[in-house]
Length: 271
Image (cartoon, rainbow, N blue to C red; front, side, top):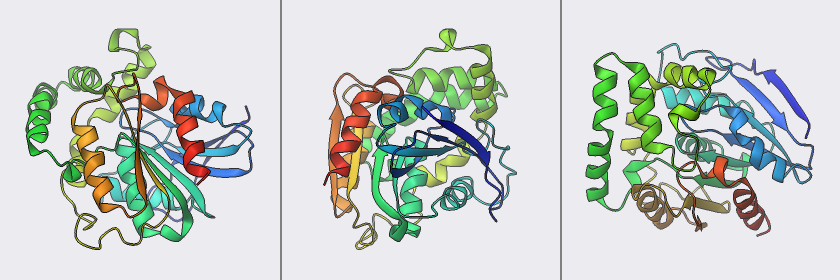
């Protein structure tokens, strides 16, 4: 698999690091989840290496990208960085918080998004079951309390425990990986306005009308129950969307089940 890395220096508020996998004819842009990095797409990219050239970038405060400078909105800053990489119509794929960034990118430049895949999107504002949102708040309490107490290492470990189904547990991670997660954990609260509220009006009548491209809403069968509820809510709003479930997978499905994710992408792209 060919891998090329570069730093994006387009006129965006903060430049970000990106890398490229594969050499296939289909251009794809992929966005990772919180506390991860662009390299987590290696497995999916390897499955698609002859079909697609996959570009992935590190969100701010992740991987080799700089720390967010606390200016503006965290999601908006990453949307701007992502849009700087959309030089032609591409297939857009996002996982977890990266899926919420991808969704906003598609809303702003639908003309440059050939298809949109949202894997385990954490756009909780779209969830149909408010009871599940209350459950999620309770599940998040230990992580939130650790962060407020000034213990980012414990907060990162608890956050990883909450969302890492289908991926290595904290004790099995390398010291470098754990340090990267501790670095990124501070920005999780900054994501709350983007994931808990419908700031862009997507859920309002007609708010998603511009998203006419094929859309895949993908989640694992063993994920947190709030995610299928989010996908059900999005399915009602998005005009050309479908839901697919990968059996046996949890929230980290793009890492744990790359072959199945690649197969789902092929199915979408063939429509």
